[in-house]
Length: 170
View 1 (cartoon, rainbow, N blue to C red):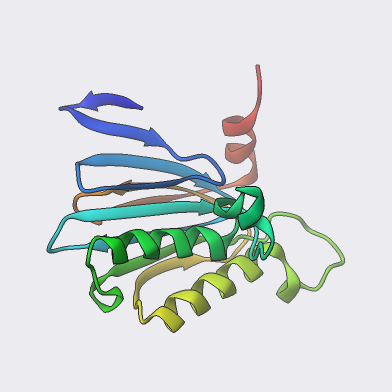
View 2: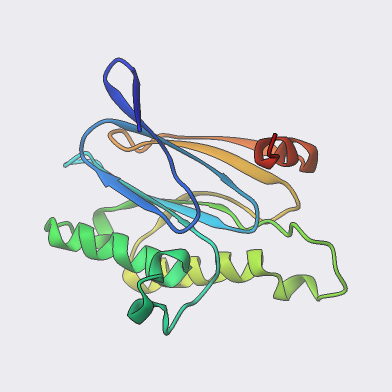
């Protein structure tokens, strides 16, 4: 964490992590086939974001790795909003990621990215949370920056060479 921007906490969210706060924070992450869901409650200023890697992890909870999965990460965020007394129909949700990053003979509709998006959409719909904005699918990665106290999200598409330079090790 960094506090470079006038006391605002800056966080880089890694795969399998979740961040939730009512204090101002700038949370950034980079996505390929992974997805991020941001949830924001305007009246309280409570905002949360997840970076999920795979669609479902039915047995992951017992191993402590549920946040790596779309169902576990979104479920965790929703539980935290519920604990704060916030109804799901009062949340603003935004969904990003789910790119098809690997070209293969695999059918496109079975890609991990598409599965991640489908699971996220289904969980949010079933919970009564409306998605107010989304940028999903395609073949490019994305960098997103989420402001927890306003719900604002900035997004930049990243081509494969930009993604490579972000993840290269010197």
